View 1 (tube, rainbow, N blue to C red):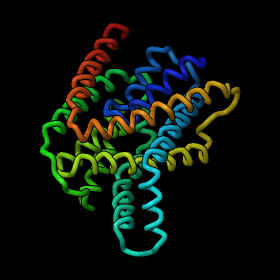
View 2: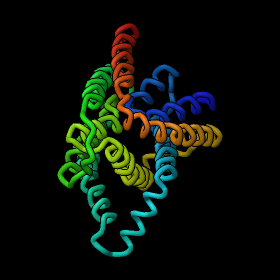
View 3: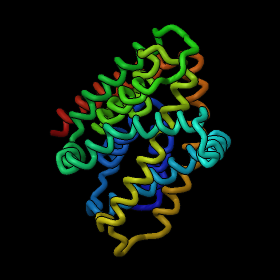
View 4: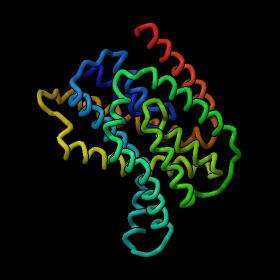
Length: 265
């Protein structure tokens, strides 16, 4: 892998982490098209760096919200910030359980499993289409909703299912306000990303041997900058109910992925 490949994968990660088209699915497609022959641990290092970059872009975009939440938490009172934090924690439970107990089973689904990515992208397109048809409301995310949205996030571990698409779609289908659904979706994943990074580092899963620093720096910068753009854009898209265009995109990319697999199988 060279700097050019890293920059492409960085842009893919930054855009698709927030846009409802599956970052994991597009990264797998990108690696397949670019012919990524990196060792698993080296490839994992780049993936971790790209996810770290998009997590930081989320923090930058929602810095005021996060500062308000932290301030409310440290007041040690049962306020709106404390309630919101509890909902975030509840939403993390399903994905954390799946990641802890079924990590090895999940890893089998990644890596050259393009046909699965294709079918999951088609499933994502259906979710987005249904979301766009939902009526606008002012309802906030409840505790029960938080857990159900968390289940959607756990399912979205599958490559090809958009995490943001699945969580926002589930929240909106449950009757929640679209802008609140987007905000909750983006904030709920930040603790999980940092937790996963810490676990990979502590477990020695990441290799830095013979690492080309420039490749990782370029990947980080492109993922961070494109993430800032995509996060802001996605909030506007959800508010204006324009997800149907991404539904169409996911459908055709999904079908194209399946065809690509059959031709090159």
